[in-house]
Length: 195
Image (tube, rainbow, N blue to C red):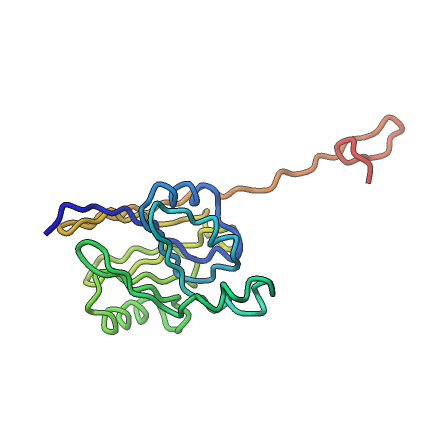
């Protein structure tokens, strides 16, 4: 048994955009795990943990959704992954295999009983189910698409004896609105800019 402690960022469903607040959390972690629907190489480059980033393919990670120049990176994304951590293993699946939440959680617990946790995405809804082993976790959407209350992620602090999980969800950001002003001649202008 070691005293090694590892901090892990768990995220999913970025669809080509990683919220900066989540990117900041990832930088404070040793490992980052992405449960699919990455959406492009920009997200992979923005995930900068101290040691390692692991990402899997989601149902929208295909040639139609990724730029042609990034197809080689897309081809390297596996459909699922198993990651060894102090105190246990985590299974990453995307979660687009159907069923209700209860059915999915029951299925994952049966399929991946040798893991300490199963992480999935797809629904964009954060869910932490620690009611039985393995834990079944959905970090929510870490981008700006269907965040259901704001972008989110999970942070796992683990060592050989303990796993502590923190669920984070940030306020949604909205684009600033362009205020309409009346010009001197009574016509409307767009913040004083032409065009």
